[in-house]
Amino acid sequence: MDILVTYDVSTETNEGRSRLRKVAKICEGYGQRVQFSVFECTLGETDFTRMRIRLLRVIAPQEDSLRIYRLRGRREESVEAFGIDKYINFRDSLVV
Image 1 (tube, rainbow, N blue to C red):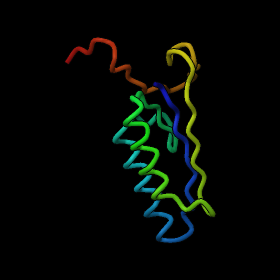
Image 2: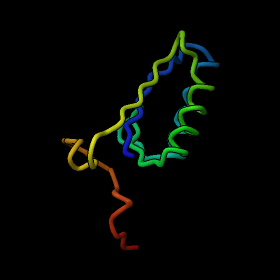
Image 3: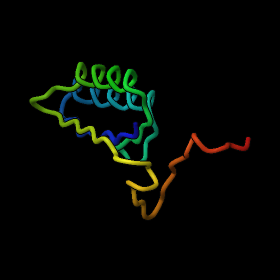
Image 4: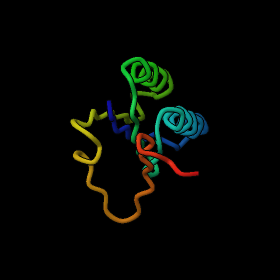
């Protein structure tokens, strides 16, 4: 499944800055950053559940915001990108 993860972590305290780094690191392990606090991920159900659990353990619900959107259909049909778009489709053939 293709998903979009967005977050806004309060960075007013050292704890908040630590949470921000942890959330970004978790997301980097499952997808690719397309904006500062936005990641696109292609995951199976198991990895999706693992990522979600890990993120929910890190955020502070009273201070932070986490949104996960399930994209319907293929990314190419669900996402319009304008300007800089560093997305790499790893399902296509890659030339090294």
